[in-house]
Length: 296
Length: 296
Image (tube, rainbow over all chains, first blue to last red; front, side, top):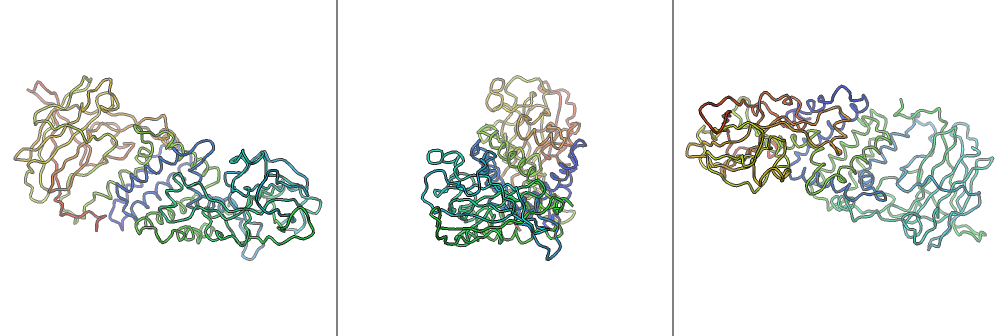
């Protein structure tokens, strides 16, 4: 492709070949591919010095807007779909056509906490005031291969409140671990607890993410979603998100996390004074012996 | 290539296609190519979540180490050859095979100043103490097509001092505009002035540039060089650098600025009490009517 643009095609190899002998094999593979693709990009679009300067200033602005509580580098990667792609690469199983697949993974995002408390089945993760609708979530975690329930799987859930903020973004309104909790599945692989119907929210647009979204004429919204991480020592952990099927941003999630099997229906719940909605969701876990494509 | 790796090849198109209708044609071209290449890079190397996280942290560190006097984003681009490639794209002329070429361009770098004073031919740009060797530089600026001298061309030179620093990096030791100056060619296109034999120096390695260079086992040195910008209203401006032929870093310039026709010999000068070395260098400028490849 380089040659077809009239520029010296040997230059890129010269840059790559300057890597020294102490470069690890993996770093050589990664940096060789990255340098080659960045060069091909510049040749393909005939990148001008002024455009390159805009890019340099943009890269510098990413770190300048980031701190221990804000990660614009992460956000920019999400906007260009890179975190979702890396998630696919890490988790896509080497399945035959037609073979049953486990629950799809989706990106972890920046709001998972390692400190969420264990709670009992039937408990609620709603611990602070809100203006949302309460929902009962229930379902079963099963073995993809045997179809049997998996007892003692850990079902970790976290979600934003009805104002679109997670507990540690919103300490004035939310107690620590509000809308977070870990549950253990029972002997049949079942779990159930109370939560909020999730709420759509915008990424912060006062930094580089906003600049990029404006440049490519995209909105900053994530569809309403809840986060899940389901784990058991004998199975591949699934980190994922679920999305109400009536959300207007399903087709244009600004971080590209939506997959078909992750779109769910909240249905009316009657006869339960703790909630007016219900979500049934079963999870299929793959045994650890199944290989991902990237590990082949 | 995506398909051959087993990952969903339609994902990248979905990301690109989300760009809205108000995206400019040029932004759509640039971002489409950039997203496609970044995705292909991730698929090619099966980029892992941990490696991606290292990359995010590295990107954030670039801006965090940059300020009004330090541009790590620029430096990282230089280390991967991107500024040199963009310079080639901007300046490569659409020449027939065997056709005479103008003086090669090379990157501007971060140390050019718009405020360098005009000086008279025969003057010196050395205005502050140093430990280097003095040299007489002389030559002729000619029209690539007619081979005639170009009168009244502006010959702008800047260089680091013998300690490897430019004036505004080194205000304790160097007066403003030390080792900078603009000269006008005479009626025959000739110029001459006194300067220093240049000195090799290291890029700063206490930031992300140092992290990257260490990762790919490369030294941080630039070969000794002097910077030139030669301009005239009727000709394409040439911004370039010249390198002494005996420099040990010619083949491994950390910013890839060296080209064959920019390597020069400083020769002993006798009978001149102002300098012990001489550099003869003629410059060929292309008329503005000649097209670059990227403008076609």
